[in-house]
Amino acid sequence: QLQLVESGGGLVQSGGSLRLSCAASGFTLEHFAIGWFRQAPGKEREGVSCISSSDGPTNYVDSVKGRFTISRDNAKNTVYLQMNMLKPEDTGIYYCLGVGSVQEACVMQLPLGSWGQGTQVTVSS
Image (cartoon, rainbow, N blue to C red; front, side, top):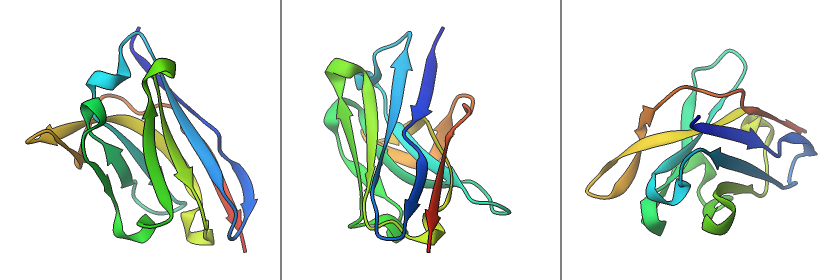
């Protein structure tokens, strides 16, 4: 069964850090572009970041540039989202999902597959 499982969320104070993990089972994550998305209470889900297959280009939404870093550990079949300098507006449920690619670059606007349970991130002021 192909599956992505998110973990690593929690409660953190403004300015703190968290590292989210997206672990894959049933397939080799390295060959796929993967995105991180979040949904804040009362808002639509938005793309946060994505990483292209085979360590290709990465993309970030403007609001997290310079604070978040997406990466892969192919040996662990896992994609990470390192989140630093967290702000209350980063609060939400974070999901990972496969995304489409254009000219080998990941595109957050092309989510693929079914959403998982996500992991809750809460940033207090």
